Image (cartoon, rainbow, N blue to C red; front, side):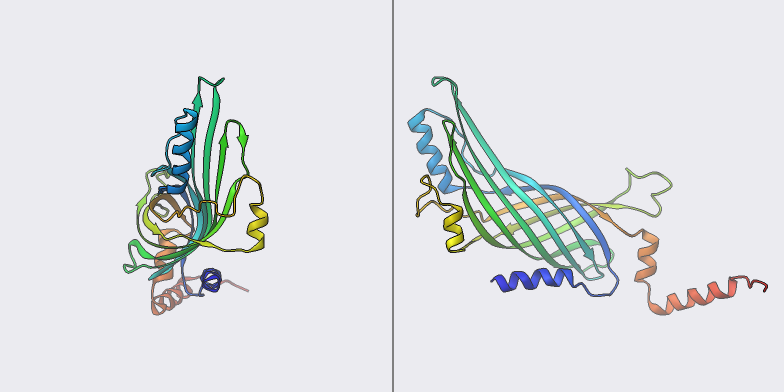
Length: 261
């Protein structure tokens, strides 16, 4: 599995030399994640200590940023992002005792997709996430060492982007544009065993050897702004057949005035 991850990432770095429209992106990330194991601990704590920490159910938010390349019929992308949820509670009967649970999932992504319509920014494909999930329990001010787990997560997605020009100056609207992209996806998580390093990472009296391992497989979506590096004119020229380019260069040579020596 790890070999497949490195293969995907190398494919994104070693991009073919054919024309592509490079871009950067950034935006909002949402995950509909239910943490069953953490919710069991929270419910037991609420009943015992008269707290009201909300369960972790479909309330994860974060960001995702990165860079990629649109080719004529494909897309390659590298990215990084997170999903985080923080639930708190205060008990006024016990000197305003605070309690909270924070869950954070971070991942680096290699993505490859198919772009079936050259003139439209609609793609579908798969991605591979390599990341870490971290759970920190803080009950009554006693901050426990976080539970750290490393995960590998294949993802299946589709997205569609529309051109937006209304924030540009009038003089720029004929040549330049940016994209508003919506991407629903599904991630399937699997925890990676890292042996002694994992034991050292989580070595604390507060974490037992059979600590609850939550599965963070989920549906989600991204809403991001995509900024291409090429204008419409440059893109049309580079997508044009080679014969048309040769003809245009010959015309330019004929029209170009000859200087005197």
